[in-house]
Length: 213
Ligand code: BG6
Ligand code: MG
Image: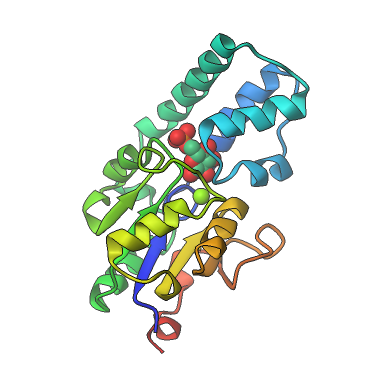
């Protein structure tokens, strides 16, 4: 019997995965790189600095540390411009219903995000208080695909790893959850997330009966 649920944020709770993609695409264009869907699948769940390292690698560019930090800040500035206008209407389909059902079934929820902006985004959509525990980029030393994010989230829930379900839209996140010995629900399609245990197109499609059995 599963006892706790851990949710990724970007691309699972709200459409901020698309905002990250837009901002990275804009920066990549400056390096003469056309960032594609395939590139973006590899960036999902990856920290800001590691994402820029991958992009520079694909573009065959090298930046000195000062330029590197400047471009990280510029990308984040563009991302925050998009986040700025978010509000409680910007939840992905089915998310509100999912949270209501979790409360009804008394299932504790934790957040496991790779983003430094996670608390800001949660406050924009009005969900900060919906979680028993929040793990974000400021609380971990090792990002996804390392299991630390999800192990810390399970600790905050006070639930054993093997009794947690993780909802993720990223390859690195699914790998991290597997490494933490957790059951995984891929939010997306098998082609993008080949390792997940099961799939939903959005949280509203998740059947809590499976969970309760
Ligand atoms: C993850 C996103 O949730 O957070 C990545 O999937 C993003 O695309 C990463 O790079 C870090 O986010 P931020 O907000 O700290 O730049
Ligand atoms: Mg995500």
